[in-house]
Amino acid sequence: MTVADNNWKTESLSPSRTTGGETERPDLVRCNPEVDLSKDLQHWDAMKDEERYFISHVLAFFAASDGIVNENLVERFMQEVQVTEARCFYGFQIAMENIHSEMYSLLIDTYIKDPKEREYLFNAIETLPCVKKKADWALNWIGNKNATYGERVVAFAAVEGIFFSGSFAAIFWLKKRGLMPGLTFSNELISRDEGLHCDFACLMFKHLVNKPPKETVISIIKNAVEIEQEFLTDALPVKLIGMNCDMMKRYIEFVADRLLLELGFSKIYRVENPFDFMENISLEGKTNFFEKRVGEYQRMGVMATPTDNTFRLDADF
Image 1 (cartoon, rainbow, N blue to C red):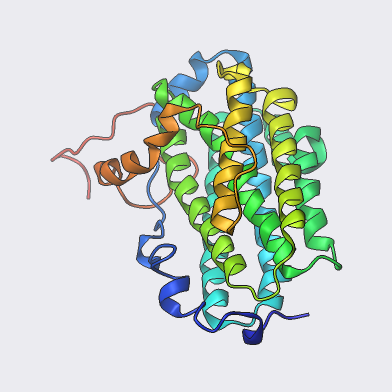
Image 2 (tube, rainbow, N blue to C red):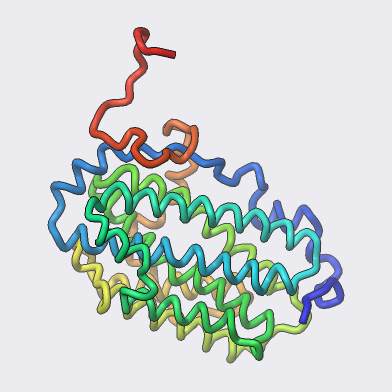
């Protein structure tokens, strides 16, 4: 089955709408920004065991999930969607997800010194039940031959818009506490990318001629919300890092409502954003992005020691 040009509204997928305007221009895609992890190691060593446990398991989920998103893009969406502009965007997305995956691998390599624990986290889909449940949900949508493209585009909008949202918020909570600047900076950049991918999924859905019924869409979103709430309040509770679990539940519902609006439906949870610090993230990103050094994602071992990175006239060039 392919999703060809005749399945779209005629005005929908011009280049300016797929790579600009309603999402963002491709020149705003992050070009491997440099992330300094030297201070993170000091914070990591000073953290409580439960805080390190939470962070390592969230990173394990992220490392696994980007591979699943790419599996869907390569095996399903790129095979089905024949609209040139959409395929172009999916190509960008695949490259971005690979960068994210490399970053998460670097973070795990930097923080986790025990090779066995690293291997355990890198194989999170098999080793961590809390990650496996989320992964299985997404993988089931990839393998479902009976689900329409419209249903699956909603499901993967939920993966990037709901499954990632609570974990992103938890890491931004660390930023509010002044912890782990390398982790939180990379999280800020990656969360913007994932927001772009979610926006594009909504754009594709809006311009589909044969959309799934409202009841089906709401069922998919509700199911994703329940799984994410369980993940961050039971299986891997955010109370481990000092966050309120009830507020996290409400935040996930708030994000789900926002996604439903983007898809063209009404809110179903009707809750306010309980995390004031999340309201300012987008604005802060625009004002602070150029205050950071920009280069490339560091490779393993580079700047991974607690040293200051200062400009010196006596340095070897």
